[in-house]
Image (cartoon, rainbow, N blue to C red; front, side):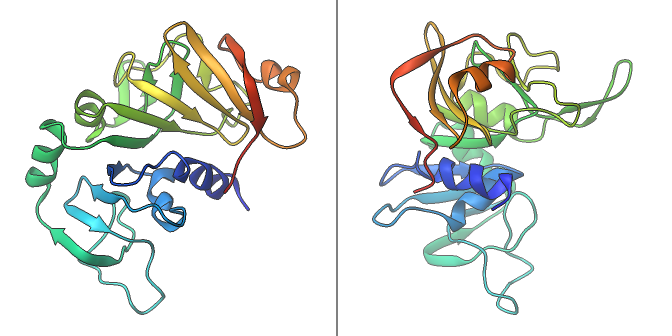
Length: 221
């Protein structure tokens, strides 16, 4: 199992029955494939679909029906397909219960930076996309990302260094190594990947955090 699947499987455990859920670009799109048994949620994608399922079998895909990453999805009973203006009316109107977003950085204050890759001084790419609307209009934002970048530097920061998409909006941080909840006093470490210790997580995390009394092994089901 690669890190993307691991994060997506753990993220799916944050779903609650009956929720309206936006799945953002990147790792979040895979959550549709790992919804736990007995949980029914209404998935939304910002490019224009409400109520969809996971990845179709090869040859069964419809190129006109895709998720935020342009990957094929399956339509389910009650599905609706529309343009992105309708999708954003739902988001801006506060009709999503939760949003799962990929991130470049998050910090101990619940801030998220998820769009601005620096190209040169003062120049960033690719652009904020729909994340600005999602973090402003959704009560529960879950950030999904690798714990460290390619240089081994922590992406769980004391303070975000990239342009911030939203301030104080993240409620849960799920990485390939750990799960943090964002509480009013800061980050709380809730789960650790098997074989690692709290000390191991401290070494790879720039942000300060406390440890939950009921800390447990990273869950996948």
